[in-house]
Length: 203
Image (tube, rainbow, N blue to C red; front, side):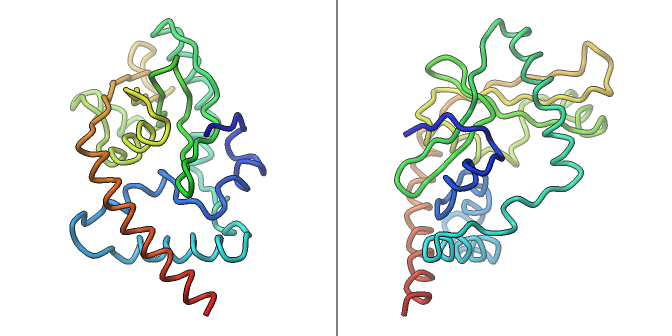
């Protein structure tokens, strides 16, 4: 299911209540094959609390200077991406399958989506030299393709302080069925962790 909703709007936050979202995929996938770490356990508690109360976690709307920078620069990065790739980006909205939810930064055609990171010069320069994409977001990106049923996701990095020809960086990440299968298994275990917390709250 896909809802055409503006990210970070009240309706968007309401749609996320009680759902396990791909923005936390890296936390859930950490230590894959082993017990969940404390960050994942804390997230399971928050999801359970939302499911029981129907109220969104107050920290969900937390912002810092880096997030503010991203919100400010993301539209420019999206426009430059459209020019560079001769494509049209549709609002990412909110995808969900039962209790799983996801919001890519945009949708391209029927098969693709985008993930935008607006970074500082030093971070951008390192990525330009290294190539590829920031694997700190690998599970979130595969999560976009899993929940949205996309074939690829363009990782976009943007830094307006760099020379004009170096401001935009694009790297295409293809859908990896093996990684998505691992996510399915791990997320099933995480659902059990959430359910245990729900049972405690309701007992």
